[in-house]
Length: 532
Image 1: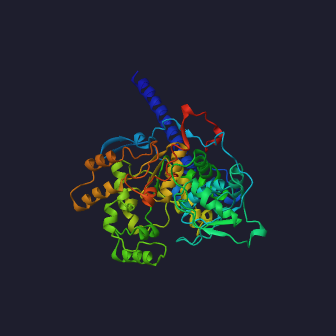
Image 2: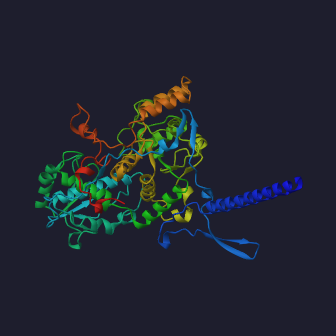
Image 3: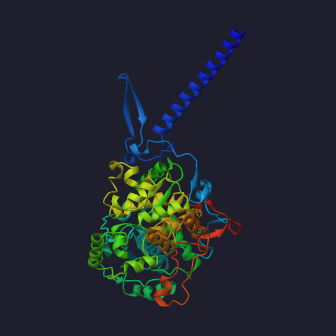
């Protein structure tokens, strides 16, 4: 009887052992699959834009397996859901990643029944854009509206090739020119080049007045048609007021920005590939780390830099003719919140908000000033720091290298599609991405309160405040209402006059509410105007 019992026990143990071995084998197979295929969604890219991602792996000299292999740094399994035991206690990560309430706002950019589509042209409008990518984008969209107001034919705008970045890209290198022309056909006639017979014609070169209304263009600028067939806008940025324009003009600006002005197919394909590779890690933050040489030189911000680095930036500022302000008090700039957060400060900020060290972060930026020496602390806190160069091969990025506008466009795409967008500075790209995300559905954007934060950071440096629960509670409280929830665009600061009044307004492309967003309950949604 006892021997029978022993045999029965041994049989049960054998079955349990077999199940365990089978389970381990199944898990091993699953793990291998996840490692080799980190992203389950591969974009449908034209062959010329695809990196050869297959390599032959020989097994035992007899069998060759075609295996899709991601770049080495992506050969890991996606991050699992997890909880944080941090400075502020147990924080559910679902709460950190939760998107702000939409309040049922939807895009409404269709023209009204009284809108007058393009008519017979009165002349041709040439546009020279200025600034970086997003400054040019806003300017182009404004010039579309100006061309409509003037009843002019718009020649495809010329991109800025003389700014700090010295980018030689043409319009069609950055944007989808065909789509731009056809999608605006009912609003403005757009042509690629000035007619040959007008190539040498005398033209009026004009600096359009900043933040102008419709009356300025219909009266002062339109009168130029009496003497000229061609008007050239020497600059394009901030040529239209943010507020108090006719609703149809505001909607046209939105149609131009969010529908007509899309990136070239090559850039769109590469941007989608970068997004898919970031998604292989799960939800991710896009961090616009505006800690680049041009930004620091322009703003005069030298906190945490060596004396030599500070002197180098000052020299750049002094030698850049079109930067008017030469003498800047760096400490005063920082105290007022006018400086971008340093990489070190960003790390403290993210930790205080509650993001764990395994959070995937995409660095949307050009070359970080000082490189590894200034990135070291942020890298130590958040090892999964990614950028274009880490996510893509040199062959993939080859067509875009040395073209700052095209590289910035890739960052723009990854930032707009991110689960959370965090700008370290409120620059042109940060504002453009924030506005686009609001238009698409108020995706979470955490805008650091730099003025309040640097006060806390200084206390940490002075030893009067430590990282931990107290700092975390304070930082979280400061940013409860700075996460991209719907709100009406801010008007001018009370008491300001003239140019300062317009300058103090929130930019139209930062927040297109109420002009281009409506409550769903009061708007019959036309899916054709939705951005997918």
